[in-house]
Each structure stands twice: as C-alpha cells, then as structure tokens.
Image (cartoon, rainbow, N blue to C red; front, side, top):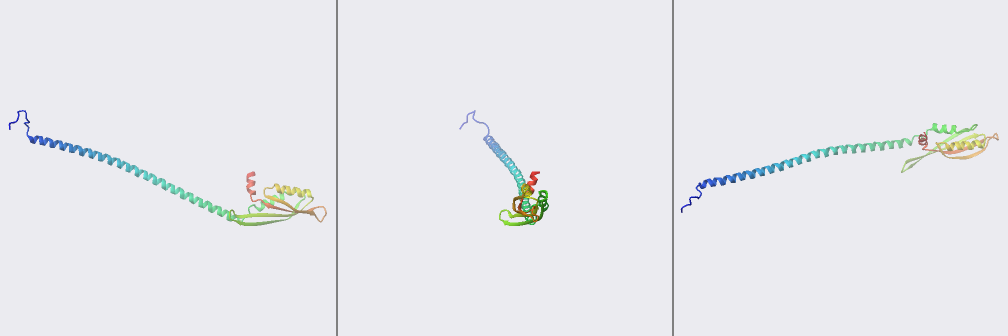
Length: 201
C-alpha cells in the first residue's frame, strides 16, 4: 500500500515515547497532588492534636487547682466544726455570764439603805438534741429594805438590767425591828446578756 505524501513521516516509536512521557508527567502530577493533599491533611491534623494537647494541659491545671480549692474548703469546714464543738464543750464547764458581772448588777441596783444578806445561784443543765446543752441559771436573793417603796425600786432596777429576766418578788414582810422589810426575790440570768451589752455599746 502506498502512503500519501502528507502521511506522518515521523517514526512511530517517537509517538510512543511522547505518549509515555505524557503518562509519566500525568502520573507525577497526580502523585504531587496526592502528596500535597496528604501533607496538608497531616498538618491540619497535627495542629488539631497540638491544640487538643494544649487544652488538655490547661484543663488538667484547672482541675488540679479546683481539687486543691475543694480540699482546702473541706479542711476549713472541718476545722470550723471542730472549733464549734470545742466551744460547746467548754460552755458546759464555764459560766455563760461572768459571776463578777452578775454581782455588780445585783449590788449597783440596790436602793439606799437596802442590803443583801444572801445570794444563791442555781445552775441547771439539760441536754437537747438540737442545741446540745440548755443551761438555765436562777438566783434567789435575801435581804432587808427600809420600806416597800425601796423593794419596788429594786425590782424595777433588776428588771431593766441586761443580765436578768423574770424578776419575781417571793415575799416581803416586817423585820424584827417592826419597820424594815425582809425580802426575797427570784430572777433568772439572761444567757444573752453579754451579747446585749455589746450591742448596746
């Protein structure tokens, strides 16, 4: 068969090499694209992992700080409760209102020419489930006043004192001299007397 003069006069092997070269370039391009995509994905993943690790360290630090705060809070609460229990225990063996304060209130309220011959203090402790110990203190006074007006004035003074409550006259009768009055007064010690005096100041 005779070929046309314009038919391809280049060696077929050259065409084959050219086709092979195109395949190689295309393969290299595909490999490059895949490599770049993989590298980008790896870089993104690595950045995400670094962020996660950083956040993990931050969360761990905050968690440790929170644990320390909780431990300190629990410890303080325990110490406070122990202190409260200690105060309650001490209160069982101490006077709620100082005896010196009670005596001062009793004597400074005395009217003129009125005296006390005997002062008796009775303390009762009752254990309760809520407050632990309920303490009541009762005072019995025995003395002599020149007249009924002095007794009334003394009762008024005791009633107005912050240390006392429930002031009651038990009796008032003529003394041996026929003019003075023997008296007996019962009153309770106010357990909140010290707090009331602080507020008044």
